[in-house]
Image 1 (cartoon, helix red, strand yellow):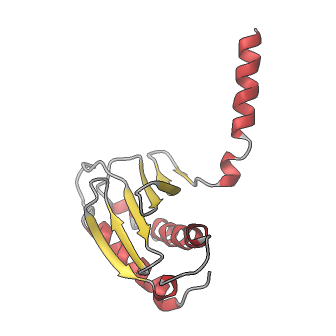
Image 2: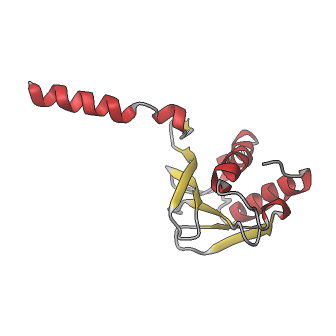
Image 3: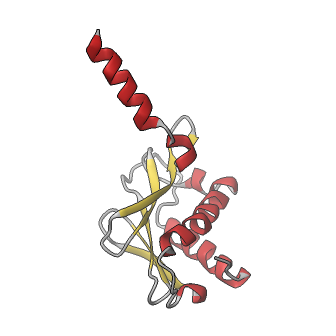
Length: 149
């Protein structure tokens, strides 16, 4: 899915606006994840915390009445790229969020669709299919080997 530069700017702005609440200079104190909910019908992107408190919202025109069945698969890389831009610009370094915390893509039932970014003390982990590919098979083989001994 291609979106305009104006829409990219709107997404970046809404993310920064949402994170302003957690910008601090003291010790980490807030325990929460950041939830991103894109609405296929209205085009709205809502950013909230674990308590469903809306932190910011915007409308992405290209998302309004998107016809495909792959909406979340299409918006996931767009949102991930914008979250990674925040990381690269060191915006996330200034947050008073207790680590580890995540940026999570959720659906209309508030179920996790994808973990966009996990911020941890030691390193940043990018959760994607490539990282987790084959993990089930490796764990099954390990368990089988362990039980046979």
